[in-house]
Amino acid sequence: MLQAHVLAVLAAIATTEDPSAIRDARVAAYRRVPVALRGPVRTRVTRAVSDAIFVTRHGGDEAHVHRLAYLAVIGREPPPGDEVAAVRAAFDEARAARPERERPSTARALIVGIVMLAMPIAIAAWWLWPHDPYAALSEALPPSRGAYVEGGRPDPGTAAQRAVFEARLPAFTIALDRWRASRDPNARAAVDAEREEMLRAARGALGADTVSFLDAVLTQSIAVVEGGVDRHAAESHVRSVDALDAAIQGEGLAYYVDAEVLTERATGASRVYLSSFTVENVAIYEAEGRTVRALRLRRLDRLNFARAVLGFTRPQVRDALVLGERVEEHLVQAIVPALASDGVLALAGDDDLALRDETARVAAMGVRDEAPRWLGGDGASATELGAIFARRHALFVAWSERLSERGIVLREPDGYVLDLEPYAALTSALAAHERRELEALTTSLEDEGHQRTYRAIEARFLASIERHEVQHRLDYLMGTLGTLSPRLEAMVGPLRMGDVVNLLAERSNAELSAYLSELARDATLVRANLALLLRHVFDRRLWGTAECHAALVILEGLADRLAITHGPLVVARRIDRAEAARIHAAITARADDDVQREARTLWEELYQRPLPALRSGARASDDTP
Image 1 (cartoon, one colour):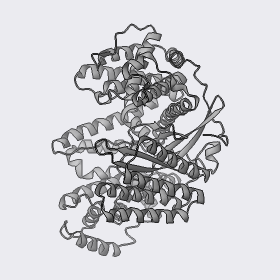
Image 2 (tube, helix red, strand yellow):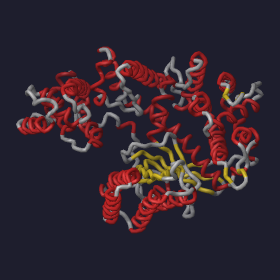
Image 3 (cartoon, helix red, strand yellow):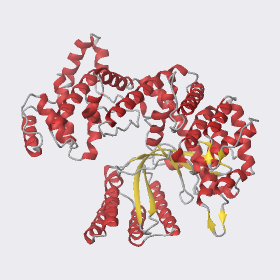
Image 4 (tube, one colour):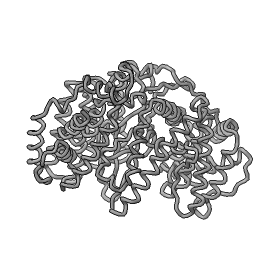
């Protein structure tokens, strides 16, 4: 019985030809396994794959490795592991000979489960019936074609509509970049072919306006790569992409396209990155008669570039954008582990480990003090969830250190859900008790209570990041950023130097307004947001960025407002991290409501106007920009 489920999982992955679809196939296969059997099945699959990967030089071919594992589980002697075609033929033959045994019936699963659990039939049937173990992580809002006006979840549309953005757009982007790199005529022909294929698919799935704007974006992208681009042409390209997104929104579809144009200084050559997202939620905000949409996005394509930010917008883009997977990574790697009773908030910096570790401890204490306010006073559930993630993090740190001795870089999980199977080949670096603990931690996160706790935390942070990006949009619309504080100007220079725009000054001023407005609008996240700002100050790699300059002005400005005596944070062109840590500790020792009040006063002092009152749940007007 158990073996039948193991074989079903192995077969599902072994028959997935597209490497980019392996993860989805794996998740779907485990969802078909009864809950009570999922742990033992996962353990046996992981061990079989771990053994199989060492008998072939094609360890990167997951489908091939799973075919080898399948043959080993049924006790059939496989061909030599490096003979991919022979292994496939043996697998196909073996699978054809046992189709039913590979697909266990739910009735058999119920009978065995009842015996194993010794529970009443009704409870066992509910418990064993296959279902998504992480269903409580997702909010089941009904899709709406009116989401971009009323808020909510847009319509995912048809499979053909999704394919335009999930498959055809990435294929065009890859072909375009290959041509940029090679300038081969055949590569250019491939670009034209992908463009035509995408437009053909779009004409069969999308409205005429959307297809027209899509055609313009593709044509402009080719022109940018072909002839290079100046700043104004790049901005024009971004506006064309924004017009495409407006057309998609006009159809009420849950898709978003972003474009980034990068130009090499030495050669002037340009490359275009087009990426696609699903829109998980639309929130409508209103301030002083202006409405702004905030879109929560999740990456749809599988291209190997990403933004290292939690959210973004631009003057030429009409919406505030929040990147759901980046927020999730920030939470599971930094914020949630800090909620453990002895948790720390990860900070960079290795020249003074004692200072770094003490500051990380103080920052985590501040976050833990706020957590009950996020959960209606339930601090215990936050502590329990934090302990799971802190321990998972510690296991991966130890695992990574051992593997680094072999020249292997191990990436820490960036999501709530951890699929252990891709790590199967590396588990030899873990002791047996560590493997069992990691499996137990993974299983414990299937608990609905933990998922509800995580969702409540995530919702709080998503809303705060939405307000951050909405403030950027309001600043662009209201002309707030024409004023630069003397303290910031001393760091980055004036907004304009003759006819030249100082881009660093512009970005630093924008981040200063947005981060400070976050502190001013939500007293329940004051310490968490201060901790995030501190990470920009402590990480030497981030020195000189807009976020770092904003953090320095905020720390010094709040210290002044709260009458905290302090020295300069920048001395001889270097940040005094010890002084930054001291200021941070002194600010977090104050009441959150006091810090919130002084943050508002500081924002209004810097920008010489009242901070706009922000209301969520509004309805987008027809002229929403």
